[in-house]
Amino acid sequence: MDSRGRGSALLAGRPRLLTLLLVAGLIIAACGGNAGAEPTRDVTIGLGYVPNIQFAPFYVADALGYYKDEGLKVTFRHHTVGEDLFGAIVAGQEDVIFAAGDEALQARSRGVDLVYVAQVWNRYPVGLIVPADSDIQSVADLPGHTVGIPGKFGATYIGLLALLKSAGLTEEDVDIQSIGFTQVPALLDKQVDAVMGYLNNEPLQLEKAGMPVRTIAAADAQPLISNGLVALGDYLNSHPDDVRAVIAATLKGVQYTLDNPEKAVDLSKDYVPGLDTEENAADALAVLQATLPLWQTSGKMGESDPAAWESMAQFLDEIGQLGGPVNVTEAFTNDYLPK
Image (cartoon, rainbow, N blue to C red):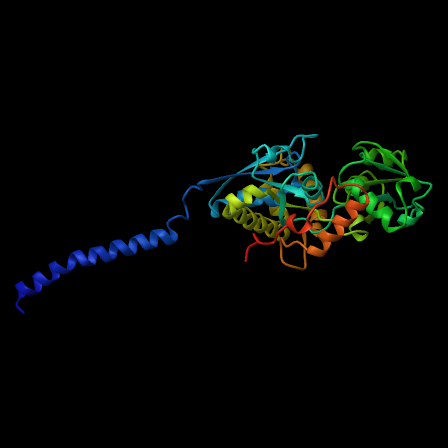
């Protein structure tokens, strides 16, 4: 072939080469071109309390871009004190909520189609708190003593009933006093002999105030499902990929917080007012350090234990906390967890 023929062949091959390069470019863009793209799926996560270091895994997942990596634009909706826990998600103002399994089961027994999709707190966080020098050595020693609780509602009340039941006691055997959320001053001032509180909160405050304490965990008395991610059945059916994405990113935030608690506090400063002071940051780290054992699990992260759910449901029914029959197997699922 002469030079003219070779030139014609090269020119003829150029369109094919350009086409191949264009296809390759499109493939590369499809595979990696979304790394810097803005997320397009809006999800609102309900956090059942004001901004607090105990929500650190969510803040971490947002700050480090875990939600964005899943294609999500997440908004945190912190609840106000006294707000109905599931009111906003039922009203469509939230897509996923961080709530306890016992709370979700109680609401489900009253007709709210809530499904618990991932466990975050693997140990129920409340317990009985007594001064270190108290003669209350076990729950069996409670008769004849006063126990302060915020009121006959919530985790502290459920936890107290679980402890009493484990010792063969009833509410009538103990002088239970509703003291609001004043457990720390009530115990310091000896207004009561013991209080029910969160094991990662009140004991730290009491120790800081100069009162050594002992605790008896409700989780040792009765399997109770603590906080995790919860969604309505309709949302699970219509947005299954969003639920999977929320779970995957949040659990990554949990693991990072477990591995890096000090960094988690730093990352939470943009989300929790007041953490920019040295004292508040130190207090937050102490709370976080006390919370880490409540998140740790020896099993698969996020997974619910069916036997624990059945035991909890039976217990809640026995103490009159369910509004009607409930199918426990429909109240939770492990199907949306990362594979």
